[in-house]
Length: 259
Image 1: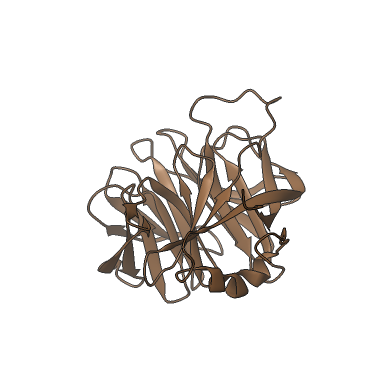
Image 2 (image 1 turned 90 degrees about the vertical axis):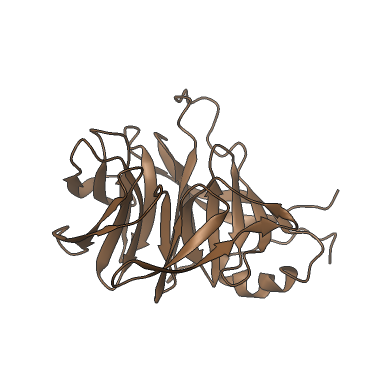
């Protein structure tokens, strides 16, 4: 079995958890592109969600930060609210028909109605804001360190922290987050790798290598790195993109051959 190339869909993540904490090393995955969708090359993607047939996207940079509702097939922005120029937009998560959005260094976040993007309230936190996701009950937040904060959704009060590690090595620069079949997927900033993380122990259960996903025919800016993970739980589809990328990709994972 260890020598067999194993094609998987995200619906099999639960089964793959058998290779997690008890395995001597995290499982390594590569990918296959199922479909490439258009993506706004001006969108400095900081957060990504899929909900009820649409993508929800948070973009960054001062003076260019926004929250958007986007058609998957065309990349058309059908709804948008812009942040004030002093705010640098960061990660988002959608929970109970509300969208939570972080900012980078302002230590303030926003909660919007998912229906009409009406601002409902603000919340405060210490340190930097990077990524957000949730498990239907709690919110998980990254801040660029090797720790994920576990947050109470209603008041954004921090409950505890999860130390993320691959064996004895802490894994920092955790950025955009997505909760997928009981695990947290996390972009590692300025790399082409996504970590599969246990939300209970912080163990890295696997690594997804997305090297070469964006064709070298595209000339992108130095900051145009992989960032953006969204999951369609109903159809078991995984989507990824990057900052200022011309495409968003639906991918299927494949276990790497052992060397």
